[in-house]
Amino acid sequence: MGHASGGGYSSPGTLSQNLEKLSNQFPSDRQGRLGTKGRNKARVIATDNPAKTAENMYSALKKGGKESALPNGKGRLTLFPDGSRLIHRPVSSSDGSPVVEISIKGPKGSSYKIHFIPKESK
Image (cartoon, rainbow, N blue to C red; front, side, top):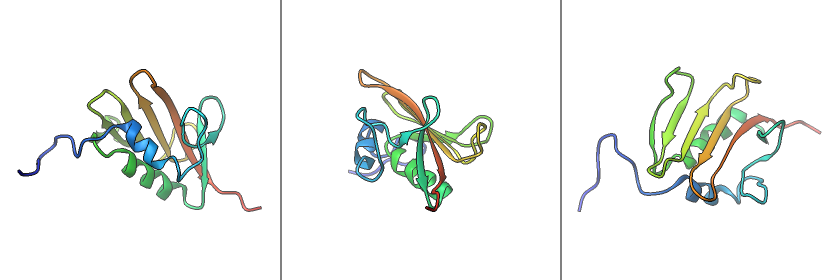
């Protein structure tokens, strides 16, 4: 027995399985999409440190996938063996907030973006 090295996929896992593991840490809807309803189809997570929360979520969700830089150099892309994909952009083109895009393939597939915004003080 050994371990794989090089640029292959890391430990087996799927994006759906990784999302399930995070579902108790973040708000989610009945379909299992993380975050709360935002504008259009986007989801929102309000946090004290949007950049760090987005980075931590991306790091947890990418397990089992193969990561590379986005062609435009403005983020990272992780592809999974089942065709699902995950994108992290530190600065979104729409509002400048960090964003994680989730695209799950398969019968229960879904595709959505999560914007990470500063928590409002009340």
